[in-house]
Structure formats: structure tokens, C-alpha cells
Amino acid sequence: MTARPLTADQVADLLELAPLEGEGGRFRQMYADDHSTAIYYLLGPDDASALHRLPTPEVWHHYTGAPVRLLNLHPDGTAVEHRLGGDVATGARPQVVVPGGVWQGAVSTGEMSLLGTTMAPPFDPDGFELADPGELRRRYPQAADLIDEITRRSAASPDTGS
Image (cartoon, rainbow, N blue to C red; front, side, top):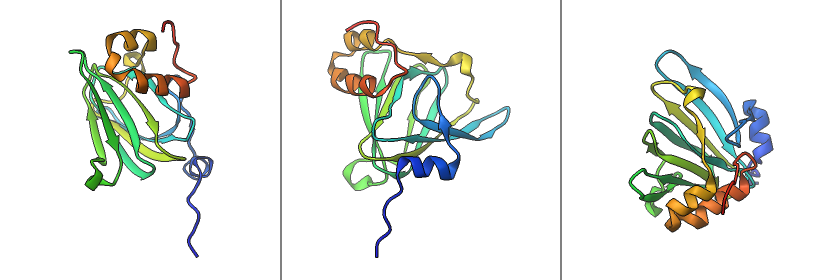
């Protein structure tokens, strides 16, 4: 008999994850010192990592569950969609590095995606900036559909323009 996959709520309970204010999803900081930080990060079927940017690089790690669509919007106008997951034969990658200064947002492609992120230097909340999705739609029209999907799932994202 095959065990049923865990739900997002079950994973959140087992790992003691809490809502991540501002960004969305659920998280728990696993490590922090003067040089780096690491968190568990969970996206459920209706969650999104709101479009945001950080001043320093962030490494995303996929642990289990559905693949994730991770959107990166670069200052030079390019938009790149990464598939974060374990099935490398189909183009997914278990780790993706988001450079500092790049807008980023993500959604799960299924019922649950357990991820982690690592930052060195450590995360500083003063460097966290939420995006104006309307402005990003105008600057990156080639990514408008995924910007809309991330914005729709993200109650945290202020949408001040269309």
C-alpha cells in the first residue's frame, strides 16, 4: 500500500512553519549567523512568493513536492523562467541562484512544494523590496502571464497598476 503524499498543511505542521509576512508562503529560519541565513520555504497550491527583489544573491533549493515556476526579471529587460525541481531530465534544476537586484517570484505547479533558500551575506529585511506588478507587466511584457499568476496567488503583492 502506497502512502498518500503529505499536504501543505501537514508539512507546515511537521516542520513548524509559519506564514511569511510580506512575501507569502510559509517558512522557518533554520540557520543564521553573521555570514549566512537558511530557511525552509513552503508553497501550497494557492500560494506564491510575491514578486520581490533583494540586494544580494539568494540560492533556492527544491526538496520535495511539485516543481516550482521561478520567475527572474533582470535589470537589462530579460525575463527568465526557471523550473525548480528534481526531474533534471526534463530541464528542472534542484538549485537556482537568483542574483542580487533581480526581481523574483514563484508558484508551485502542484499541491505542495517544499523548498529552501540560502543567503550569504545573510538576509536583511531592510533590503527586501516588494514589486509593483503593474509596473513589472509594463517593463517585462514577455512575462506578463506569469507575473499575473504570481500576483493572483499573492495577497501580499500590491497591484497599483495594470
